[in-house]
Image (cartoon, rainbow, N blue to C red; front, side, top):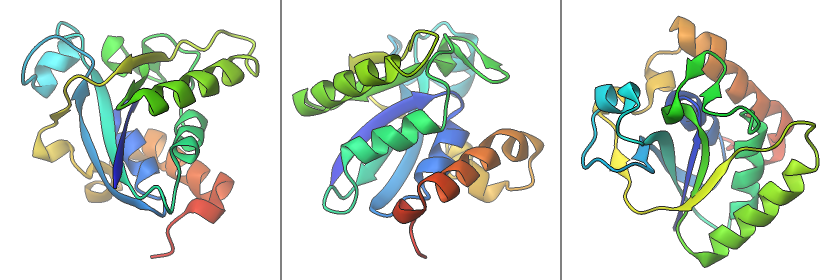
Length: 175
């Protein structure tokens, strides 16, 4: 198994989208890319810790590749929005890829460069090495799954899940 770490706005939405994929063993919501140790949701939301809301994806590279995870990640958020996604504004909602090794760094850099040519606006996705991943509080894990009728989830997470199911039908888990 391998790991990939992405931030594309609210972690509830990114987690829900990634959990749809075959070959993904687990998706954990958390915080990364900041300077404070063991940050809380409240501290991250203040914008003072430097962390982004991210998900850590544990996946089987024999079933789904890192390239495919990148494709889904970039299809489910707007990488041209600086420090925001939809109604969520602040550095904690920035678009970010945190690589685990040189191969991921090179793959993500090439993907971002190619993607930049497809948009009128500049792709602002941050690419940085993962120093430390902090697991978010339990109430944030599997949030969409636990709260499918929550208004925020219906407005923001559900459309991302539908995008994955429709656009990446061949990658969606059968169960």
